[in-house]
Length: 306
Image (tube, rainbow, N blue to C red; front, side, top):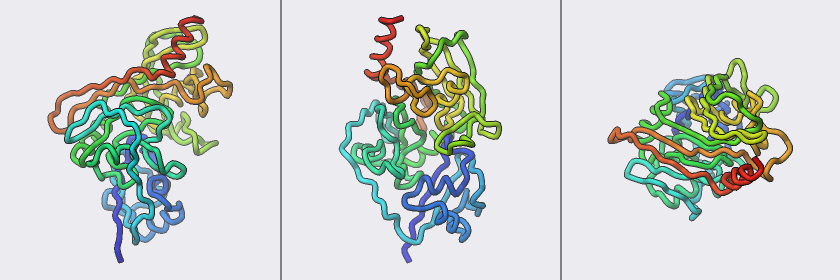
């Protein structure tokens, strides 16, 4: 019988996930019960060892899944616009637009960044399987900005290690509700799945460590523009942290107020800078992305109204 082996690396924002949920979320057409059966039969290994379905994964661990038949889903290359800031034999740096999902998953099989990557870049690392080729880290669907993609497994492992030891520089620009009094601040609060809604993250006592540093760029009437640097990269980290301190990101439909501001249907959050050491040369490289037009338009409106 033909078998398929999928290797999945645990990204930073997936740390702490149960093994069964992680596999079900990252492999097509496998229910949680099917995944649990594969775990019981020894077909799913963590770093080469058997583990329970409830095992909590750590960043950088490798999950191997042995499937008795090939996966029925084939991810198609799509000729979608893609802003490639930089590219060499080992990596590519992308300026991801707002509204684009990073990789295919249930409910989003087409028009993702991965679909575009498969068209524009023919060689991508295979560490994260068919659904996430080259993906080392992620941005939320409606968060725009710069991200790096690995073109081979050597580069992928190097970049993943830099993320793990927090040596990658990640800076974001965010517009938040309310006026923050301090010019500088740190939000050090653990993040995990919300106990009330699994689709949301929250600050919880048993969550994973999460640290966000911020600097006030400009204060407006009832709003503050901030620059945020991440020491960790949990799912929705900036959105959860600023909601936690009562300064939710403007436009955030999940963690912010229900009332729309500036007619935004998503968060005013942009990844404006990414810095890392090149996997092969060791040279420090830094890339910037300008604020997208929608964000600049909101700031222009605030400039007029104060």
